Structures are given as structure tokens and as C-alpha cells.
Length: 258
Image 1: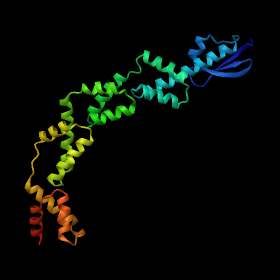
Image 2 (image 1 turned 30 degrees about the vertical axis):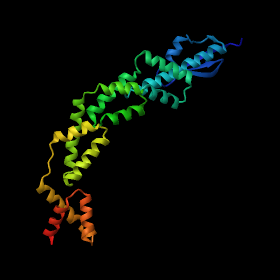
Image 3 (image 1 turned 90 degrees about the horizontal axis):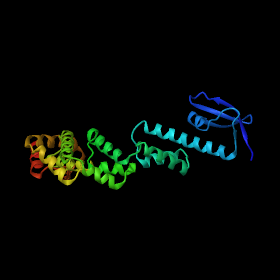
Image 4 (image 1 turned 90 degrees about the vertical axis):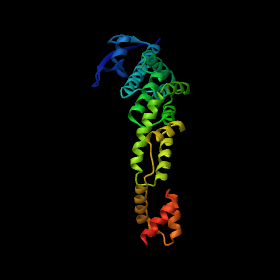
């Protein structure tokens, strides 16, 4: 059996890191934990098996350190962590060991992640269940957890968020025809991931009604803006109708201009 002797342990500039020399030559770096666990000091003799075990342990400790650092910014799913460690080019045995350690310490918990993610989405965005679901799928949250956690969301909370979002959209669409505004409003709510029931209820809660004076003002403004593009009145009328204005209102507005 060939033995190598530790002849020097040199502290790196980075705190808690050391370079180990065997038989007078640099061999490998270790962290303080590995140094203590294997009782590395000058004069200790190591065989090939022990050296490989030290290097394997050090690789696991390094991967664990990277994982904890990755977690320090925000919660992660198991898939995100696994993908991150693979990207850092750690092997499967190392990743398995690190994932197991993180799970035992409750640093990785997809159920807790899903709960936190949903709450954050509800508190900071206007996203509805379908968009939240899509985002969690991308994060790698298991489908059964997504389904269970979304089922716990209070419908009143969803309606409140949807109604608040819809109210903002109404203000943004105020220069459009009432019909087009309503169409855009429904599209926006569906695109945000709300169900048909929530969309209908949110719009009903806003109690929106067509205001003829406002509608006429918006129509006249639209005519002034686009009529130079059309040398044929019928084409102008068709265009205005596609924007949600009624034929009789368009004819009346054009007659007033003549």
C-alpha cells in the first residue's frame, strides 16, 4: 500500500479554505469542516482510498455551500436546485447527497414553496390561478401540489384582485368605444389567468354602463384621428364599426362634420 504524507497545510486568502500538500507537492484544497473531520495535519499518512474519500467529501461540501448560497436569495424548488447543481457540473452522486441533506434540514420543501409562491403572486401581481399554475409548472412544482395549493386559495381574494385589475384596465381603455373597452377588458382578465366565472363577476361588480356623451366624444376624436386615411366614407364607417362604434352614431357624427 502506497502512503502519502501530509507535509503542509496552507491557509488560502479565502477564510476557511486550505491547500493540502502531500509529500511536498500541492494535492488538493479543503474546507475547514473537511480538515477537522479527517483530522488532517502535518505528518498524517493517507492511502489512495482515504484521499479519494477526502476529495469526495470536499466536493459534496462545496456543492452544499453552493446550494445554500443559491437558497440565500429566495426559496427554490427541488427541480430548480437540482438543475442548478447540474449546471455547476456536479455529478449525480454528489447532487443526491446534497439534496438529501437539504431536505432533512427542511431547506427544500415544494409544498412550502408553492404556498409562499402563491401568496407572493396574490400580493404583488394581478395574476390569476391559470398564470400562477403555469409559473409553478415552470419552476418544477409537482402537479398534485399545485392543484392542492391552488384549491386552498380564497375565491373572494381572487375576485378582489380581478376587480382591482379590471378597474385599472377600464381607466386605460377609457378613450375606446364602450364595446371595445368591454372586449379588451374581458381579454385582459382571461390573459391574466382568471376563470370565466371570476371574469364575469369582476366586470359585474364594476357596474359599467355606456355613457352616450362620452361615447360620442370618443367617436369624434377617433374620426378626427383617422379620417385622413380614407377617401371612401364607407371604408371609414367600416373601420369605425370594427372599433365598436354603432352605425347610427357614426352616421350622426359624420353628418355633424359635413
